[in-house]
Figure 1: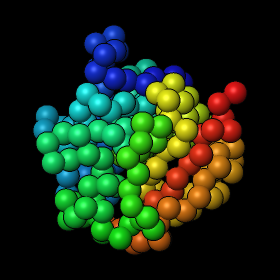
Figure 2: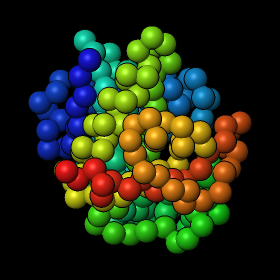
Figure 3: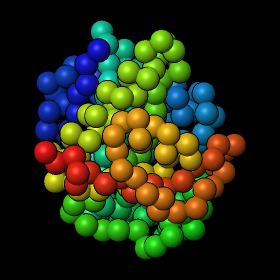
Figure 4: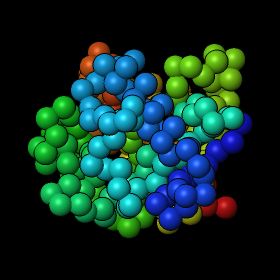
Length: 195
């Protein structure tokens, strides 16, 4: 099992990995979760898949087992910035505007995590290991990018796995039911993980 952080600067070094990541996202979000999201050529994508973002993939023999997208909270692309902030501003009709307790942050040292998934095809016997590898690589990549915090809209059972992964997280918004699943915005503190 390998972990790779992709960017537009290194994507050419990893063959089909980026395309396979977007294919796995389609399987997870469009096929399994039945979300109404853009797709083309068998891949799921949106306006946040741009050169400002990074993508973390856990993979084995070309098969993507899990993934996360990281986007700087300072990102700008037309009217869009990052998913949580754009939802709060009313630019996204699928996520409620009241998803945060406070105004969405815009800071060079805060990044957003989104499109987090573990593939439904990942065998149950290795899922915990895959999830741990995903979170460890996300933490490493975010720190390398200068992040001291990561903001994400994630399943509301986050306290269980953040402790297991050694992360310090605090609720940044209320628990919301989205498409039948309880989710919550969480701010993960990476500053203690810098050494």
